[in-house]
Amino acid sequence: MTTRPLQIWSGVYPVRSYDVDARGHLSVATICNFLQDAAGCHAHALGVSIDQLHLRHLTWVLVRMRVELTRHLGWQDHLHIQTWPSHQERLLSHRDFLLLDEAGEDVGRCVTVWVLMDLQRWRPQRLTALPAPLPIVNRRRALSTMPNKLDVPETLVTQRPFQVGDRDLDRNGHVNNVRYIEWALETVPVNVLNTCELEMLEVNFTGEAFHAEHVLAGSQPVDTARPTFLHGIHSQSTGTDLARAKTQWHPTE
Image 1: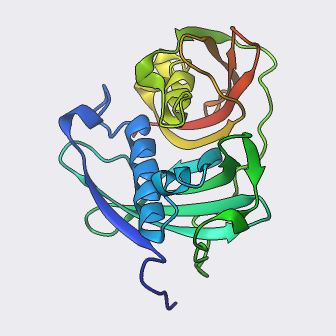
Image 2: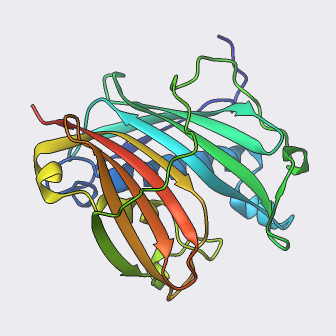
């Protein structure tokens, strides 16, 4: 495979003491923050970062993602991330990620789907509106399973209420994508968190929540043999469906 400069971005993220969870693993939220940072760094190098798009009254919105993890890193490890634009449709831009350890061994993979939005009308725009074309890399996709539309949980067995604060907001003025993931994971039973490791996370981001809104997150178990949950998050203030997620876990060794 031959690639031109900037087609594939690579970065290294040290795992700090505050990046690990109660089990000593690099937290899922931090992994997702690293992924978004890598996407932003690459977009900036390509001339299509959020700052650069705001000058044209445009922005990126993440609508779907799927992360698969094969091994969890810990404190003082270094996560190496490679990312590249992998596919385009009329309104959708796909970006793939490889997650590697210091030896270059695969520890995870991710596929994300983004929409270009008009900030003034808040309407999707064709990718031809970008100030620079995205170089689509002709290489094997990071995952064979793409993020798809998820079902809404029929019954929220475990529920957690939240209120949106200033720290929950991103640069577009609404709740950051990673916060939805954190809220969804808060509805996983403690016994699963203590005895299992996350191996798959899939999320649909379906709406926006804003400062001071009341939000309810919930989950429904759909498989107990290999713990799997459907998660739903909606605004109690407006009734808006904000996010849907699916998580799959495997017992720790």
